[in-house]
Image 1 (cartoon, rainbow, N blue to C red):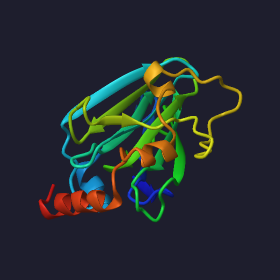
Image 2: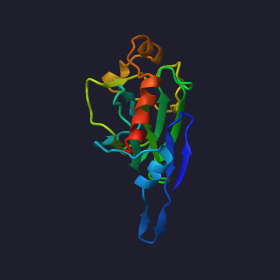
Image 3: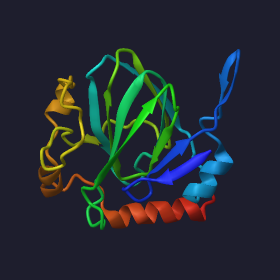
Amino acid sequence: MHVRELAVPGCFEFAPTQHRDERGAFLEWYRAETFAAVVGHELTVAQANHSVSRRGTLRGIHYALVPPGQAKYVYCPRGAVLDVVVDLRVGSPTFGVNDSTRLDDVDRRAVYLPEGIGHAFLSLVDGSALTYLCSSGYDPEREKAVGALDPALGLPWPSDLEPLLSERDRAAPSLLQAEYDGILPTYDACLARYRALRTNGQ
């Protein structure tokens, strides 16, 4: 498996080796030992989510308050999406920086984002499926969103697609407004969370 760190520190792209023959293909889209060696701790899976989206569907930017936050390991078993991570950690040297990866059923890459990082994706074809391994369960009181169409972020959404958003995502505040309202995770809180995960051997 080939691994590279994205422009947002702590976020990684995992590209599995695919074994193909006349029957089809086999691959390991997640391997605990590889993950722990790269990230520095194991991934505790508290919840596994699965979404299916029509072409043009835009979900995000979603994040959870820290602690505990919610780390995600995201994989696309069918279709294709443009997956985006955004550093929402106030005080981070890369606050507001984003990076993107195409996740699809050809290269079968996966993306990991730690607690405090925002996540969004745009479905590029009908029926795109995304599976998430999550480090904590859904908590509506701690689940937040930042506007994925915030011009200040300049996210690389394709210009030929009209994005389809939920009412909640369309009403999400800009990054500047979320920072002003004090609803973003802090870099210090995230670093403390990462240290705790490494110390606990998780």
